[in-house]
Image (tube, rainbow, N blue to C red; front, side, top):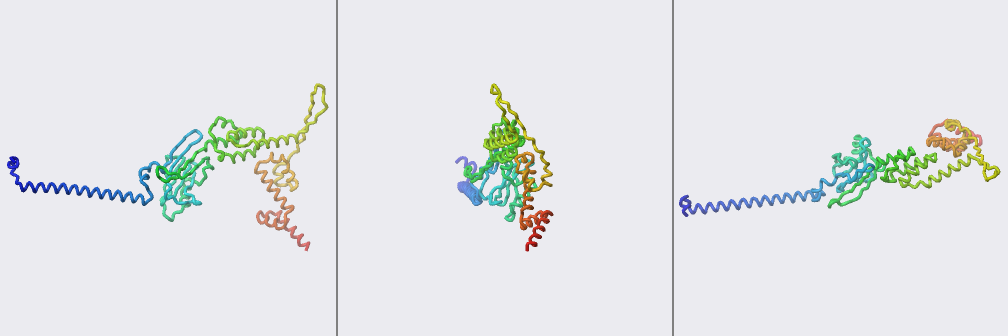
Length: 374
């Protein structure tokens, strides 16, 4: 009271000031509450917008984990990569596929292409550090237009097995997100080492290697060179390589060995003479004189049908010819057979394709015979 008197404060003014203070506090509290409600409304609207666009709450917090390639294993002969790609809103491309593999030969880079909404995205699998290539597109943009653009950048459509990779793609839920799990293993270095060993028939460099190479990456290449093997040494080297690859080549090697032994028996005639004392046998080996074979050019250009047929039916002919030379002579034999025994219709059809004057001469002769018979 003494303070009020000293300050000369009127009791009515005191009541009025208190009302102003209360009203001011109430107004501030109400304004704060209104702002909080508006903020909550905005947050709910934002979440609702994300949900409508196919997103989930997990997508907001896992953006650094999906649509990204990780190196799982990096060994001397194999590299293993893994990635989770969101599969919502993926659109089909070539042959209805929702992803396509492309390869950049100079960069030795395997990549995967997706079409999602209004964008095409190319992710590098072999070089995860590379940023994805993005093509913005409209509903009129076709996938082959994007492929042409990528071709100019050096990327070509491929299958992983063609370039020494294995791949697996499966549907997975990663922390609640629908994803495509893509796993690829790069065996290209190991594949090249085995190819060199097979083509040179030398297994020395691959003997210490313990890493297994998947059969689908090398079996057709192995079979091709196994057919071309001519000597026992080459077959032995291939057998060592087949054992490393766990390919079943024993039957093929045994069959080829039997054929070689038959040739030796045909070429060599062993005459056993009378027994001498102490059961010692004297054996004479008389080798057949080998006939001088005519050159390949002769059989390709000058040989008659009978002569060419006799030459090719002999077992030794295949040894002296390359794969392409042998096939050319087989084609030549078919042509000679057609010229010798072909009907008028067959000759006319063949002449339309190759316009060989020999066919024309033969056709005229047959037509003349037909007219004479009438």
